[in-house]
Image (cartoon, rainbow, N blue to C red; front, side, top):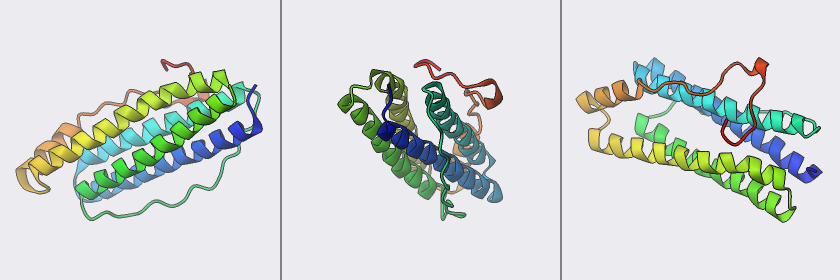
Length: 179
């Protein structure tokens, strides 16, 4: 059985995931406006991943017989000074998300909510990957520089990123640990 406090916490996390999607959509738009189409694609794929994360939680609450309470999503920044700034903000934001996921895991342990604790472990593991990817891209930006051939090559490399998550939520979203 899931507590009302846990329902509230997961609803808050749905909002965090939706804001993440908004943030990455804004970054994608800014990159597109600057002709950095590879970076734009990378951020748009990230947008879809965050929407998938939100929908997994949405379905988890519904599967638990609980209500989803969508909240206002704050407006993300519209422009950024550089691609490096975007990835610094991305890493900072993902660390915030990691902290909030850990808070859900801690609450689940405290409440002995085994179902939610098991469910949230997928996100714990996912956040390791999220932060690692951002750190690696920041390292590449430092090595390649933020202009000229290095930036062009990194833009091309990130443009090869493929979408690997489900985007049609009308068919439901699996909440299992592997999906």
